[in-house]
Length: 122
Image (cartoon, rainbow, N blue to C red; front, side):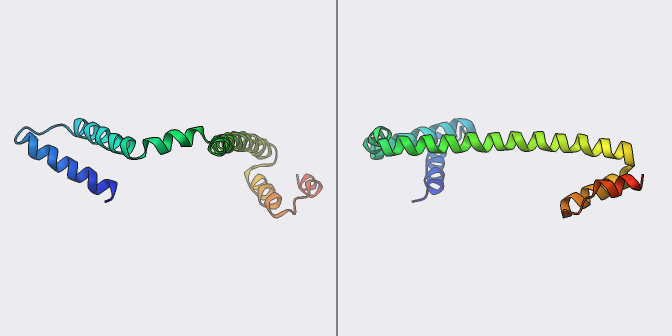
């Protein structure tokens, strides 16, 4: 049985027991979470307890945390690079004009940018 089906079954049973007095969705969700948590702990409790003591699992968990940290750092570097690029673009737009700044960006992306050619067109 899927968890969503199990949740719906519990929700229907709670509403049947409550009768005319409907419970709020938050209360029902908390009851469902508690029931599912209890079922999982009873059925798989020993497995998860032994898993958290397993050296391979601990090492893999460290690897996941390290990867997440690297992804966060890469994101921060990307944001800083974009800010720096925007400053450079604004400086080119101020010095050469927006049209020339757009041409510089296009040529830089294409790998054909020649700063001496642009300086001569100034």
